[in-house]
Length: 590
Image (cartoon, rainbow, N blue to C red; front, side, top):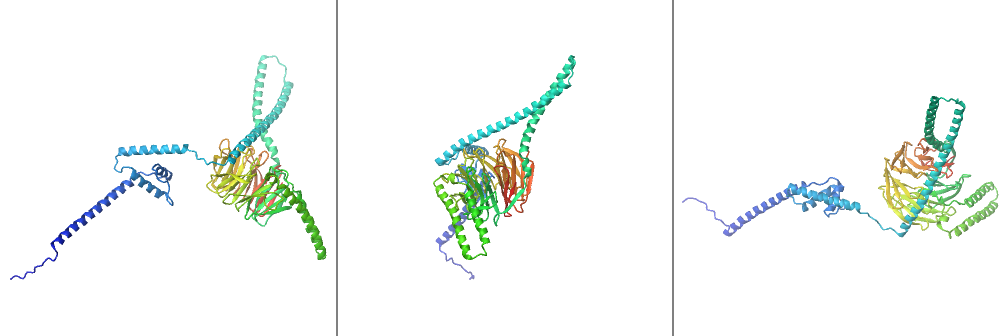
């Protein structure tokens, strides 16, 4: 009997069949999973082969053409390109032929062209208030009158110049004829007569050429005669102002007073006769960045302030003399003087109450702005401003009155500049356009244009009649801090941190001249106010330079400050200049 081991199967027959079927199902499921993975890989390869533009602006245009949002929150350009690729994979046939691909791309390009044309034809307008429409109409009428008057005056000046040149030339011709007749001999021969005719023709042609040349030289002489006084500017007074940096200066229209703003948050009113502080205005909560006299109020009465100041000075002198006397006598005297000074202050207060019934423009004497985001309108006799203008969201850097005297312009670090109605003290216009902080804002002499400049290095010309940017001058390599229009109406000067001054021509729409002016930041620029015969510039290199505008040559280099010069102002009569500096002094150049 053979020893054989017989193994019995303990698994039922039905269960064996189930194991076989389950194993086959698992194999088929794995196969399907592999096929799905391969399909996704091939699909992703086809998607990756879709041509996607590299420029982000083109990617956004194609997303807009597909009806997709052009940007999602926190999305970077690389993610935007992948999103465009996924959107295109849903639209196009990935198995298309080359011919179909060309047709699709051509249709897509045509669709993008149509979108671009529609975008260019669209004008985005924001409906403004009715006051803005009235403002634009007033600006148009006012600027038209100013422009015609300015051009007429220029023509008259030019005709007078030509008439003077002609008189000089006629006088020279008369003398030439007299000398020629004296030296001429009477000869009858024809040959000699012909020679004389040719000689006279050549002489007359020379006279005509000289006449044309002397037209230019005469105009230059007229300008040079008017700027000869500039070479005589010298330091006349150096006055200590505040314990911190003096940031801004403004000379009154009658040249009798000077406003000095500082980093001590104060504004001081000085008399130009005795160089004494008439009043100190303490209201701003941060650095005073700019201050401007209201030039349309010519009748600023400094007499009450002068009288009050003299009374206080006399009181101090007498108190010093009476320091050795008895305290009772001193108290009696001080009470008497206090009553006298209080009487003067009461008169000023009474004038204030009477002035409150008048219009704001009659009361307005100057405006100031500060790093505390506010603008203040002041009367020299009041301790607090008569009005406070709030609207900027960051520090206000500059203020400037419109030539008409009806509006005030301001620029700020919030990338905007605003126009304020001085009668209603409301903002009627806000303009954005700079990518960074704005440092300066000036108005055209005619009042139709304004110019702004800032951290982005651009000088932008805005037309107030239509509310658009009409010119952009891009030539500075760093931020633009100084800016001013010439009284001639077609030149504008800009100074930058790149230490250069650029003269821009509004007619040619390009740079007229570049002056390598200073060795540091150009802090302020100002043309001579009457005729614009010279340009004054100040810099952080502690110098003030004066440039002739007919050839942009250096006329004078004024040195005296020991710190950065922050601001300058030229008097209306062009007889003196005042500058402020970080050395805590302001200087009077006469």
